[in-house]
Image (cartoon, rainbow, N blue to C red; front, side, top):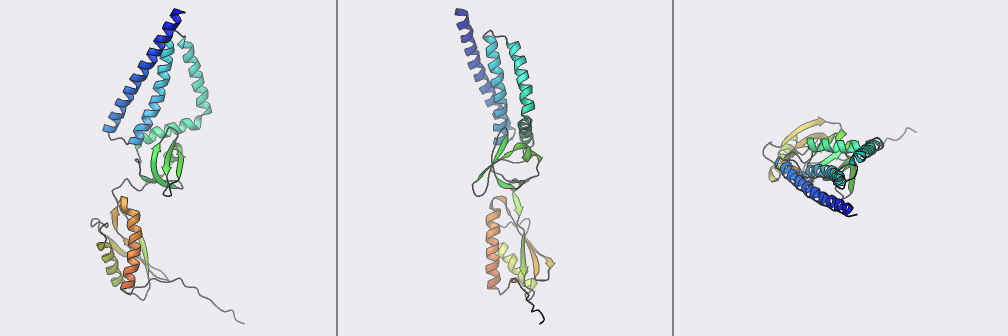
Amino acid sequence: MVELFQNLFLALVALLVGLLIGALLLKILRVLLRQAGMARIFVNFISTALGSLLLLVVLILSLDVAGLDTETLWIFLGAIIIALALALQDSLQNVAAGIRLAIDQPFRENDRIEVGQVIGYVEEIRLLSTVIRTRDNVQVMLPNTLIFQGPIFNFTIRERRRVDLIIRLSYDNDIRQAREVLMAVMRDDLRVLADPSPTVTVEELAPEAIHLNVRPWVKSDVYWAARRDLQEKIKMAFDEHGLTLPLPQLEVRRADS
């Protein structure tokens, strides 16, 4: 009986020491990964995956210290792992995809991305899924395999982004005047960058209107606000200078009697 309690005590000590060493190793690993420039969400993912593996190893080593036959346990554990691998193929694929995402780092925390039909901000990458917050504050959990298979559109990772606006101009207006007004609107907005310079070009002479391409560059973090404000300012500037936007036309024909 005394030997049993001694073995249990040694097993408990081995478990605590193993957990402390594992926690220390994971902490060092997190520091090294952060110093290497890896994003925080991927550091968390790798730490979680390795932490689960270390916990399993420490438990088995503790049982070995307690005097149990761990060889049989290893064989039994191997059989369980094989069975789980066959039963949880999709889950393992998600874990593998998460590892690939951690290596490639196609996005960072709070980056605005589009995957499939989902557009939102990255909050966290987990073992099996990635958490995305949409603009209307809805949480979406996407399987890592779906994200890894992509394509992944990242709207934030680049410092600058081009705003593409199509302004339809009535044919009874002067294109040169319209270009001057549009350029003035963009120059007056402090969010519009001077380099690359904004441009106004004729996209198409459509049957109903002249289509003008208006393309200013802005910082990525102000893209949506700048896009909305520029459209409002363009409409107000057009009204001020007597420039008109074409209205939808409906042609009604009377059938011959």
